[in-house]
Length: 212
Image 1 (spheres, rainbow, N blue to C red):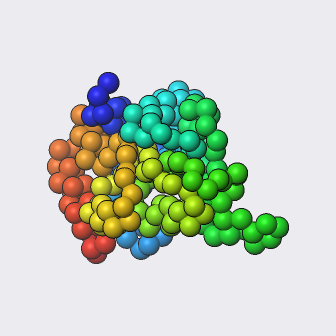
Image 2 (spheres, rainbow, N blue to C red):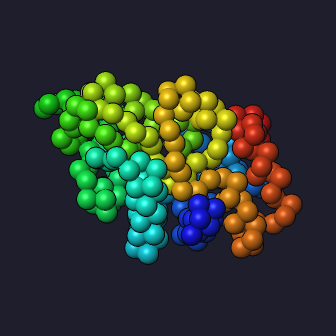
């Protein structure tokens, strides 16, 4: 399948298992305070073996195609850890993960696993919003002397601020699915009505002020 077909298939799976929930008329409230017609928790997909396997294999194939020199996978805590471990296993490469902050005892590690200087790593994230937490993980890896080839993620909202942040940090981003393809898939499957599509599209353009 081509990337567009994979994107729509992933979106269909995430909607089917309710890893993505859409509610244009009764918005969700994010921890940031943003009002949103979408709530995405890709960890739900881990509970469904067929969906979990499809996503794992699609991520592994995308990484092999886009980052053929990959030597290890680094998951972003916490949601990127299980997905990253699955993908590393599929690729037959080492796995590590990056904490949001150093462990408060013992070795006080920020990076868990066996990171090696010069290692060529792809960072694995489940969801890209603004890119802030994802890029902090990239910074931690780079400071440890690791060569970050790029980041792979299951889903992105496609915010302009995320594009700008990744460009500013010189990080290549590859994703399986995105907000625009998800809307098309949701409409085609009857998950949302035609009249709700414009509401969903408007949120992505200006999420911080939407629904205020």
